[in-house]
Image (cartoon, rainbow, N blue to C red; front, side, top):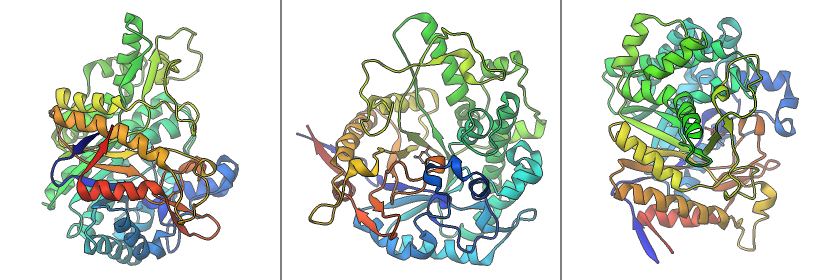
Length: 465
Ligand code: FCB
């Protein structure tokens, strides 16, 4: 048995988001998820939408005690733009929302849990999508910055770790390329414009944070995975290079290095996809330095060189590669095609160290999906046995530990998620939590993995073979 000990002060906790946990009570505006679910419930697993969630709005005090029960010293959630801001044009806040978030964050702090707060987790206010096209519009960048300023002003005394966006590429992929987020468009050029505008919104929020001389740190959370190939053949390596440029470096480079890779610009020009760019926007991107990076990791990306002809009428990154399923890979038996590759964590860490100045970073989401049936019912002691999750988590943490030994500047791990929560169109299909949410009663049922996590967090170490 080996004992793996983590650096002093390491953050242990979980990640969630406002829209996936709070419920809609006392919310003034709808987000695109509320309206999309209302209009097209059939797009959601079992037709469950964002109104039926963990009811954090009413139950946060009880839930903070559960956070303590599994040993968290930190927790990430997000503020909902559509809850906090009453007047979306001026950024004037809704007092009920200020009171709710203040009480929630204070409750965490009083219980020794450091809140980390994200501003945008896929949840555009619906009226801004309808009126302006959401992040298709430059005007909405300005409105996002006003919202960010209101958040900094309202909660800056409590929150010392801010995040601008969670997985900013996902609303681009889902909403503008692959049809799994509203507005369900398929338009490569618009996708690039939205991605660029989000990057500008991020940069301007970081600059506002600096101008307001807020205390604390600000960063962003990206879903990063290296692109692995079939083997060493040149054309596959080239395919991986393009996938990396389009999926990772398209956000990682402008947000961390403060410039776009020249080759990415060439690709966009070649396909006539260049977005509208103002000089002051580029200046904002160039000067908005982040303090840290969050990395979400679930599954590795595998690619091979294109074999079939590209047959879509609009551009997607797959123009340059095909996705590939590793025939010798290990897969999560509870989630189709989810390859298990803990060494990817090590590779991500090395990439940040070698190519991104070894910026301080944390594992902002790592999630092990199981469905309710595979987790089973609570055992005699009232606990659900999800030890599968613990064994996989250990394998990933061994790799993270190896990376830290080799110099990675990693300061924490947040598992997705705390209480099973609503997950977009998948709704509650897959469970990730330390606690099961009983959808009928709202009861939180503990899982075995939480007991292990508590000893991990308290001792800052674990043992494994
Ligand atoms: C991530 C999202 C998060 C959650 C997990 C399962 O991509 O950030 O909101 O839905 O997937």
